Amino acid sequence: MATITGSEVLAQALRSQGVDTMFYLMGGPMLETEAACIKLGIRAIDHLPVAAGRERPRLAVRRAGAR
Image (cartoon, rainbow, N blue to C red; front, side):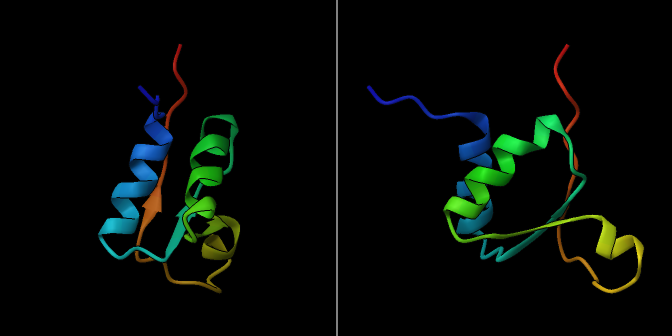
């Protein structure tokens, strides 16, 4: 049986809903999620352009690290 990560599940769910661009807060917990989304063709953008007002997000993702 193949294993799948939570990040891969999230990426697949986003893709199935038609998401093509994801804005996110850069950090360690997001690296795996970012990679999974990019692998499925979802454009991943760090939040800095949003904060600068150059982009308007349709989806923003923030994930807290596990302790």
